[in-house]
Amino acid sequence: MTQLPSMQCTFTRYTLMQRTLMQCTLMQCTLSRWLVVLSLIVLSLGVFLSASAVIADDEPFRPQAGKFPPLENSHSYQGELVFVDHANRRGSVRVKGAGTYFRNTPHPFAMLPYGIVRYYGAPADLRDIPLGTVLHVQAFLPPDPVISAVPVLPVDSGKKNAGYSGAGTTPAENHVLLLEDEPSHCLREGKVWKLKEVDLKSNEWMIVASCEPRTGGDGQASEEKMTIDAATRIWRGRECLGIEDLIAEGTWTAGEKKSLGGQSVLLGITWKPTPDGVFTRFHISDIWLDDAAMQRSTHLQTERHKSFIRSRWMPAWIDTVEYDKFGRATVTATLFGGMAPSLYADFQKGSSAHINAAENTLKHSGGAYGPAHMASKGTIREVIESPEEAPLGSSGIQIRFDTDLIIEGIRPGRVVRVRSGAWPLVNLPREEYLGDGSFSHEDRFPTPAIFPKY
Image (cartoon, rainbow, N blue to C red):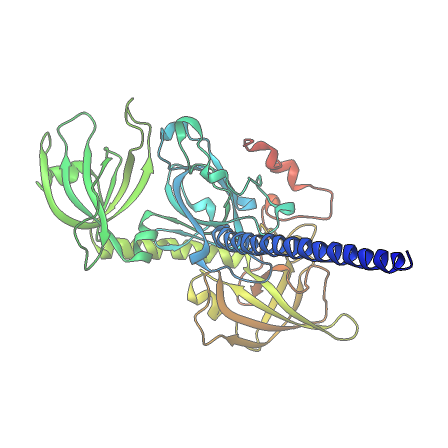
């Protein structure tokens, strides 16, 4: 009996040891399970991060304030110009898609402040381009959706199927860096249209052509059938001809098909309603038969635009402002690109200049009766040209400007208009500037609510 406590103690220790071993075993099993679960979590996280990286790479590019976005990151599409609000640098295009073209709803766009418009291979303003012209568009998401001048669409809206119109007709990228007509697009990319055949025997005259590189083409470009009519202009040297002129001289033959042997030309392309059953067929408004004819059209459009900029002033944005006493400051501004070289040459060291605040639409935003009313006047201290190739939208030219009147709209990141002292000082139409509050631009140009909802 005296040994019982000792035996009980031994039994108790044994029981405790068994429990401890069982707990350790359970802990080992639990730990193993947790290690397996942790491994799966880490693996899943790696897959998720990889997928996220792919998604991030595929996301549309959104421009940042103070930076010119690279053209290669833009989204490109093509469509007919159907509406223009030239004073606010916005409009609508009927975007070409896979479906029935005439059903496509006009798609709103806004020019970026540094966005470039080109027509006939020359700088242009939206007001220069006739409605119906088929344009090539390079665009981005709105840099700041809060102040977008056109409706902000879901990022994936361009991928959605729009019934008869198909997909791709409502891209979210509606802030345009480059807007150009067909000859401008071909000149920039080194392409020409090669005419294969003209058919003048049917009620609707047709041309078969393909767009190919000017040199070194592989002959694999797909052919396209487009309409022509008696209003199609044919440019040759300094001549402007009609189809009847080519028929009269025997170049083309009325009532017959004629092979054109791949003749290289540049084309102006528009859209006209087509017979039932034809979903998408473009129309030729102009044919440039030689380089001399195209160069003449380019020259005339360049001169038109130069006159426009001299009266509306060169757009730019402010890089830095070095403040001094009593309202004085030295302003550094980058001039926007896409203009004729002679316009930039007018900004010379030591010459006088005006700078006025502007909106992202490039509307002058100061003054009660014109751009010069509240503009800051001064002298150009320095003109700086970057040795590197400037991105599209930038001229690569900076001016440093001394003034004794620094106003609110002239501060880093803001868009401005700059006038060379060599340019005429004129007053603008009322819809092209924002005044002192007595006149709202919305009285003349309605809000984005006029555009369709998507």
